[in-house]
Structure formats: structure tokens, C-alpha cells
Image (cartoon, rainbow, N blue to C red; front, side, top):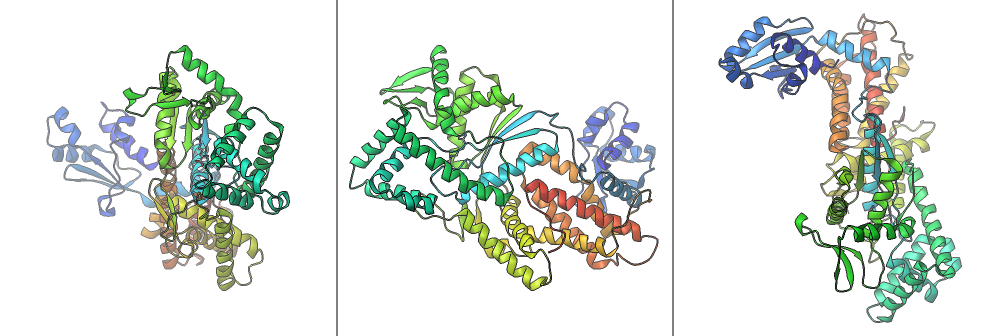
Amino acid sequence: MNERQQVALALQKVLPDLSVEEIVVKVERPKDAKNGDYAFPTFFLAKQLHKAPQMIAGDLVDQIDQTGFEKVVAAGPYINFFLDKAQVGGQILADVLADPVNYGSSDLGKKGNVTIDLSSPNIAKPMGMGHLRSTVIGNAIANILAKVNYVPVRIDHLGDWGTQFGKLMAAYEMWGNEEEVKKDPINTLQKYYVKINTEADEHPEYDDLGREWFAKLEQGDPEAQRLWKWFREVSLQRFMKIYDLLDINFDSFNGEAFYNDKMEEVVSLLEDKHLLKESRGAEIVDLEKYDLNPAMIRKSDGSTLYLTRDLAAALFRKRMYHHAQSLYVVGAEQSNHFAQLKAVLSEMGFSWSDQIHHIPFGLMSLNGKKMSTRKGNIVQLEDVLNDSIKLARQQIAEKNPTLSNADQVAEEVGVGAVIFHDLKNERTNAVDFKLEEVVKFEGETGPYVQYAHARAESILRKAGHPSFEGATLTVDGQEAWEVAKKIGQYQETIMRAAKEYDPSLIGKYALSLAKSFNQYYAHTRILEEDDQKLSRLALVQAVSDVLKSALALLGVKAPDEM
Ligand code: ARG
């Protein structure tokens, strides 16, 4: 039972006409600690009870059973609840220590599958910072959903099909050098692609060449197929390096090409339902009633589009995974595309179209500048991660020169810093990325939270990792209480993050718990030999466990020393 429920239960006993569930949603958390830990507004009862709210509050307080509370008082129309800190706090600690791994879990999801379309970079191009956002936001949402008992299915919907590959092949045929590609595949292919695009202004025939090559690919021409397979393979190898650094695993790498032979079904279903209309040789679905542009399904030359492939993918996913929800973690610039996807599925009569959610996010800039890959102005994710690791390594060398596994820790800190920076911001905000800010050990950073965790671990090491079994734990003093109270809010924070698909709630939670803990730590002699020592260490242990768990939800490691 959490504290909010404890409050609701006490209220329900004196408000028998209401259920605990009805009461629990009315219980508020006052901003100012002098108004108690929880407050219950009585306005909504006035009509029913024919009394002024102030009177209702006063009367109810007289009847409420105060056990388990330090005090319960009326304050105008509110009833303020002050928890019995020692007892409630002790219970929170006991709950964490009994099962640190599952602390904060709940059963919102009831084991329902949720497909999550994330990362999904385009082959033969470097993975940029935009894909970083999708990757880390998508992965964190997957972790959060797993914690509330959904089963996440991570899908990397690779951009491995489309007319741009025709151009790339045309470029390779003109200027390509196998050795050069083998040495540095992605950058070399990118170079060819940029070259053909830049020169196409003067050589309009390049566009035709590109179309020809793509047609060859679609018709199964062996040379086109060979090149495509090769480009895909070397690209995926590079992407894997980044996924390894981020420690992210996927359940499927079925990209756009996988749906090539599954689009006829989509087209014929649309035909059967008389949804296809002709418009200047192309086939479209009218979406006027959704206030959207018509969805183009097939171009006049018969080729299909990004949207057609997403329709086929949506059908495939529903059949394959019977999902309860289907998420697409893709930049806000594709909002219209996903609105169309959902609308077409709904027109097709699929009631599950309402399970589809586009999870948009804002652009990421670097040192205040926009990033783009089309013109070759590339910021490579791998470079950013490696720079961040280097910077973390330098800081560790200064702060903790004798650390034995410094390289591994530097990787966990450097990579964690980049991930955390992305996730502490509300998804839809644009974020600017300045490496020096991101890897700082102070301020609102990943390393700050990791450092609080490492500090807790260091105390526990000094204390010889005591056992808390059978101990009666209490919480002593306001600062300890602030820490324990935050720990007690972990579960509801995760549930909210899961419902709102918002990892930043976990990022902010971790920062705030780390801050409260540092304040406590600065004013408390934790290792002092007195009868509260074990309880203080239990608090430290619980902080360490919950910080580690919260960071893990974000996909960030928590080294024991740094
Ligand atoms: N490859 C696309 C891009 O980089 C993102 C794909 C997103 N997923 C999807 N099912 N459309 O813009």
C-alpha cells in the first residue's frame, strides 16, 4: 500500500458513500511541506452534504482515525495529512530492500505487447543525432513499459528501400571504387550520394539514371540486388557498433524492403473497399474528412511509397504481435505521415488503428546549429559518443586517478551523459547539445546522478555492506524524510511516464532524488555509531537501488565507483 492509498483509506472510513478509488484521485500533494504530505479538498462534497467546505473539513478531521499519521488537521476547506514519518519512511525502505529489482513495478500492461518503431536509420548514410533521439527515447519508453508489465517489441524499421538507392547505385556505377567502400563504407557511399545530388543540377540525366536503377532493383536485377545487399550489410554493421555502445537490442530489423512483396495486399484491400481514387495517374486515398492531404498509395509509374510500406508494416505487425499499442518514435516533422497512416487504416475498417501512436520529438541542434545530412554537413553519432567518452575519461583522471576500471567507467559515464541529456528534456522540445555541458559532473546531468549513486555505494562499501534483514527501520529527521518520501513516489512516477510516453519524468525524478540525497549526505554523519546507524545505511542502500533502477529505465549504467 502506498501513502496516497493510506490517506484515501482513512478518508473512506468517514465517507462511506465514496469508494477508495474515487477518493484516491482527489488526494493532492501540497507544494508547501507546511500543508502536510497530502491534502484532501472538500469543495466537491459541499452540495451533497449541504455544508460549507470549511465545516466539512472540520467535522471529518474529528472523526478520522489518526493512527499512522503524525497529525491530521483542517486548514480551511482542506484536510492536511502529515504522515508518521518514522514509520512510513521505515516501511518505504523495507519495501525497497525486500525486492530492489522489482521496486516501482506495477501491472498496468497486463503483459500486452507493444510494438515500438525506433531508431530506423537509412542505410548508406551515417546515423545522425536525430536518430539518436529516436533510439534513446524509444528504448527508454520500452524499458518503462516493461516495468509496468507490458511486453515491448523493439523494431528497427530500417530505411533500406526507395528511389534514393537508385541514385546511389547510379553513382556507384559511375565513380565507385570497391576498395574505397570497403575501407570506410558509410562515409564513402555518402560521398557518392552527395556528389550525384550536387551534380544533378547540371546533369538532369542523373535523375533518370537513378530511376532506372531503382526500377532494376525492384525487378530483381542481379547486379542491383547485389549492390543493395552489400550496402545494407555494411551499413548495418556500422549501426550495430553504435547500438552496442548504447547497449540496445532489437527484436526485429525488418525495414522497408521487407514489405516490398507485402504491398499488393494493401493495394487490393484498398481496392476492395473502393477507397482508391485516381489523381493524375497516381492512386490516392482521400482523407478530407480527417482534414488531411490525400494519401498517395501508388505513383503514376506504378511504384509504391514510404506510406504504402508503412501500411503493409502496420498490417504485418498487428498479425505478428497482436499488439495492445503500436508506437512510432519518429521526429515531429513526420507527424502528417503518421496521421495519414492512422487515417487510412481507420478508413480500411481496422478498429485497432486507434492503438497507433506517433511519439514525436523535437530537433536536436549542435552548439546552437542545425544539423543536416543531405548536404554532407554531417555530425556523426559515433564521433559524439566517442568524444563524450574521452571527456569523461579526463574528468575521472582528475577526480579519481587510481580508479582501476577507469576505461569502462568512462564509457558508462560518457555514453550515459549523452543519453541522459537527451532524456531529461521534454520530448517535444528542441534540444541543443554542447558536449562540455552534457558531461559535467555537476548540474542537471547524467554524471551528476551517477555520481550520487557511486557516492552511496562508497558509503555502503565503507560500512561493509550490512544486512538489513529483520531490522526495524525508521527515518529520522526532515532531510532523511524528504529522501524516503521521494523513493515512495517512484512507482507513481513510472506509471505516469508509461501513460504519457515521457521518459523525462524519470530523468527529472532521478535528478531530484540525487539532489535530496546529496543534501542529506552533506548534513548527516551516516557512519556514526548509534542506534540509528542501520536505518541510515538502509536509506543509503535504498537510494542506491532506486537511482540505479531509474537510470536503467533510461538506458544509463550506474557504475559503483567513478
Ligand atoms: N527511416 C526514416 C527516417 O529516417 C524513419 C522511419 C520511421 N519509421 C517508420 N515506420 N516510418 O526518416
